[in-house]
Each structure stands twice: as C-alpha cells, then as structure tokens.
Amino acid sequence: MPFSQPIYTLLALLAAYFCTAKFLSVQRRNFFAANHGCKAPPALKQNPWLNGFDASYHQIQWMKNNEMFVNITRLFQELSTRTFSLRFAATTRIWTCDPENVNAVLKTKADDFELSWARTEAFRPSIGKAVQASNGEVWAHGRAILRPAFNKASLSNMSLFEEHFQNMRKKIPDDGQTVDLHPLLHSLTMDVATDVLFGESTYVLKSEANIEIERAYDAVNRGVIERFVMGPLIKFYRGPAFFEGCKTVRDYAEKYIEKALAVKDGSADDEGGQKSYEFIPELAKETDDISFIRDQILGALSGGRNTTASLISFLFYLLARNPDKQEILRKEIATLNGSPPTYEELKNLVYLRWVIDETLRILPTLPMVDRVAVRNTVLPTGGGPDRKSPIFVAKGQVVAMILWTMHRDAGLWGDDALEFKPERWEQYSKSEGKHVAFGKGPRMCPGQNLAFTEAAYTVVRMLQTCKTLETRDPEPFQEKYMVSLYSATGTQVAITV
Image (cartoon, rainbow, N blue to C red; front, side, top):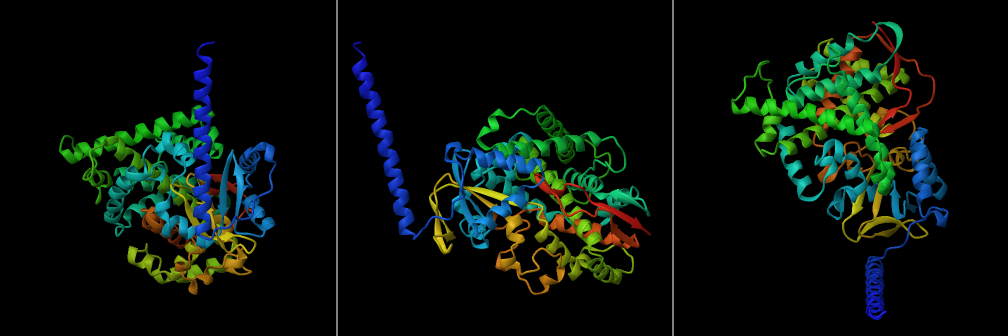
C-alpha cells in the first residue's frame, strides 16, 4: 500500500511524542516532590488487577449498608495512620483525617484545590452553578452575591422561627408516644428556608399542598449521592426520579424568583405583604441572570433544608440519650423564664453553644469533603515511615477529608472522644483546627449563622414546651449518608408536658 509508510511513520511520531511528554511530566513531578522533601504516605493494599474499582464497589456497598464511615475509620486504624493513598476507579487518591492536611486543603493552600469533577457533576442537574457545585470565576461570582445577602439577612426578629416551630410542635404528641422527629424537622427547615429565601414559605407543616416539593427534594438527595459515589461512571447513571425531582424543584424556585423580581420592579403587586427582608431582590442587585439566581437560591435551600435538619435531629438524638447533659441545658434555658429567646439571648447561652459544637463534632452533618488539585502541590504531613513528611499531590489528584474520623480520633480529642461531652468546649479553641463543622477558608458556609440560630432556637423552644424528652431508640447510632449525614433509624423520642 502506497500510504502505509507515512501512516506508520505518523503513528510512530505520535507515540514518541506522548511517551516523551509522559516521561517529562513524571520527571517534573519527581523533581517537585524531591524539592519539597515529600515522601509517599502508606498505601492501601488492593488487588492490582482491579485498578481501584474494588474500592469504588466497596464504598457503594458500605453506603447502601449504612456503614461507610465505620469502615473508612477502620481502614485508618488498620494502617495506623491519618493519611493514606489508594487506587479508586482507575485513579490514585489520598484520604486523610489529619487536621494539618485538612487545614491546608481548605484554608492555607485553598488556591491549589477546587471541587472535584465527581462532586460538581453529581450536583449539577439539581443546583446548576450554585457555589456548592462550581469553581473558578463562576464560584467567585456566586460567593460574591451570596455573602452580602446572608450578611444582611436580619435574624433579630425571631417571629419567623416561632411561627414554623409552633406549626411543628402541634404535630408532636405530648403523652409519651414514640415519635420520629426527623421528618418533622425536615419539614420545619424546608418551611423556614423557603420563608427566608423566597419570602414565602412552603408551609409543609401546615398543609399538604406543597408536600410534592419535599418528596422531590428527597429524590434529588438520593440521586446526588448515588451519582457522586459512581465517580467516572456517572455518565451511566439512570435515575428518572432524580431528574424528575430536579425539574420539580427548579420550576418551583423559578416561580418565586420571577414573582419576587416582578414585585421589586413594580410590575406586580405584593399580595401577601413584604417580609422584613427579601433575599431574592438582594441577589438581583448584583445580577439580572435569573438562572444564576435560581441556582444560588437552590444551593442555599439545599443547605438550609438538609444540613440544618440533620443538625437539629442530631441535637435531639443526643440530648434524649444524655439526660444529665439535657438537665444542665434545661437549667441554662430556665434563665429565660419560659419566654421565646431573642437573638442576643441565644448568643449568650454558653452551654447551648457547647452542645451544638459537640453535636457537630461527634455527628458531623458533612462527614466527608473532597477537593482536586489544580496544580502540583504538597500536603504538610503524613508521608514516610514516621508519617511526618510532606506528601506530594499531583495536579488532578483527589484528596478526600474524612471529618467523621478526624472528629472521633482519640489521639486528637482524648480517650473520651466517642462520648458526648459538651464541657470539653470550655477549654478547646476552634483555632486548633481539629473541628470542621461549617467548612473553613474561602468556601466556609455563608449560611452558618442562619443554621446555628435556627438550631439553637428550635432546641430552646422544644425544651421550654416539654417536661421530658426521652429516647425511644435503644440501638447504637447507625449512619445514613445522603448528601448530609442522618441517623438510619431517625430520631425516635417521647415527650411529655
């Protein structure tokens, strides 16, 4: 064939080019690692023929069996380390529960990392370009318009929280019957979040009219975590309930965004009377891109509903199981003389803050966070035989931070690390970096003050309106990971007045 020789020559040149490029890339990485004194961390023993898909399979099974973080913690313990590498779906990843490394990724070296492709793709159909699912200029723009909006959101008027709390309280029996608070708290946080963000609540607790929105959100949450653990196989994901749920919540959000912007522009009447603060018009001061506003609102709603419901559920879960700590908190709350607390009074309840911090430590609502390196970089510790040398992180490599394990590490917290002990916060300083509840660095949750206030208010009002709060779940905690962490058995309690 007359064209065979040129084709073979071209193929040979291409092969030589790629081999040379790969060789030079490896050499640059090796030089970078050596120049920074890097040594390899311990590596998880795996079947080399499976190329990391065994780890992917195990993680999916652990999640389905509600034992993912128990098993991940076991791996750290078996390797006697806080940082190790593993093959995961044909890539080499780093898993760490070391505070120094977590602080580096999230704060001091935050510019070297961004959200992983798996995370952004898992969330994209539901919240689009929200800050939880974007990087670079898109993320910076979203953050820039969200932060001032959250800062200006007035939390001094507690009537919003009181209205929705009372709607929930009416659904809780007072005669000692067992009740699962978790679904009620999901409805509560949905009603509060939509009230704050849309200026109009779903009022799921008051009527069944908007219950389909809650069901859609549940389908979205299940789909997001299923997509996330699939990693590079995400393109094969088929979940009609997930995509249908995404459309439902996006259409729902757009309806209220268009209404709020029409009222702001004077092209429509505000039929219900304006709230004291309008979140959507505040965002509209920064951009007129309705789809971008929708994505940021949906991202904020996801956090406002899911993680806040998880936090409040865990608060009641732990207080019901620790009556001695509950009694200390009741005595502090008694200083309010039964009156609904003001914002300033909430801030002054020191033991309550300790209870919330301790709850977020032992049962973190976000038990795992991951980032991908955007350039060759270094983690400060975990390499070498002594586990103290820096670790090289290649561009494109994923670092997963297992906050669940870090928050329960006896080497960091003492022999009582697994105990619910709010008093430990009298001495502990968050600046030590062992506790990551709402994130840290530039991606710290902009709505953390709202979440804390809602959680604190709900706990205070519940304890003010009941005489006893007892657990009805004798079994040990069993995790359920679905965007946020939950109790697989719910929050089974009994209340009397």
